[in-house]
Length: 195
Length: 75
Image 1 (tube, rainbow over the protein chains, first blue to last red):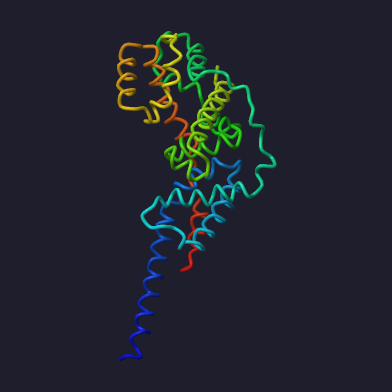
Image 2 (tube, chains in turn orange, purple; image 1 turned 90 degrees about the vertical axis):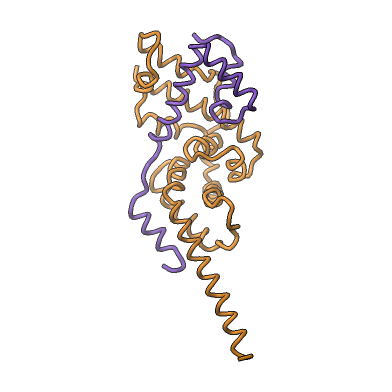
């Protein structure tokens, strides 16, 4: 009895760890669609996104014990993924930060509306001036630093605070990059609009 | 044109992001009710955000799903 007790306690502990691990993997996999949606727009091609996903998930499964249960797992996974993406040296081919972005927020709307010849068009008709492809292209042309934030917030629907945590930057930086990213996106969209 | 007030344009994104104070939200709502120019741009912004989110969404391929699944310790 006294000899078998520690062994069975140890066995129980190992079984618990194994169970936790399986649960972690399950939950991480259930989030993979959402993680992919963000990953796909952080990089230029589907192949790159697929590689990045596999690298990120391999790392997540390896270091699963660093994840604190009860915290945001989707944000934790994306933190791993964005770090890997940055490590991959994408900075080498990054586009310059500075772009003439002095157009205001209403710029895109004003431009699209002016092509309709209708003083009071329905917003759906205005949006019809844009194609799905133009959105994908316009997004891809937003400089990396702005795009990371833009994709996390506007596609991944993360809060400013979560985006700050994922990218390890101050919340004020999230806000300014988001602001500039959205304007860059609109400027790109305005160039691609059907007129 | 809208009301031509630069403040509204500056408030639009934070308003849409839900990060304004309660008092600012009330101000913004009151303004949108009486300014058709800002109101239509507001509705456009809401529609644009949804359009961008949907247009930029690409489904993961089944093959990748299987690959991720096989990365588990359990295999």
